[in-house]
Length: 123
Image (cartoon, rainbow, N blue to C red):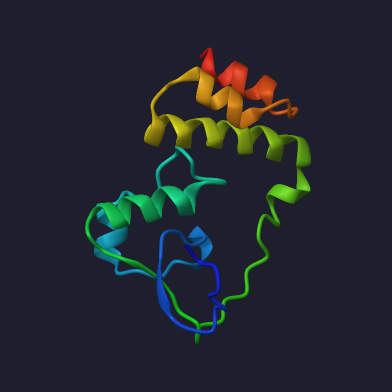
């Protein structure tokens, strides 16, 4: 979808990091921007899907510069970060792809996060 795009031009995209989204307050409020589920890791993905679902678009703006030390807080607690990542992944997958266990297990693979996924799925 983005092959050949050098990021030197402004265009509509499917997702942007939550830390880089600038939107009208009404759009953010209508999409309950600060909700618990998927807020730490998949917040941007979830928010963008909800915004696009209203008929609005997400745009990458080539002329904009944003400086953000991504995951700076989470990187200070790596064990917690791994758990938060997998719990957020499960919540995101459940929301958009149903509660199917098989899909979540495939997403986890044999990674250490599998135990977190198993624990979360069995809640």
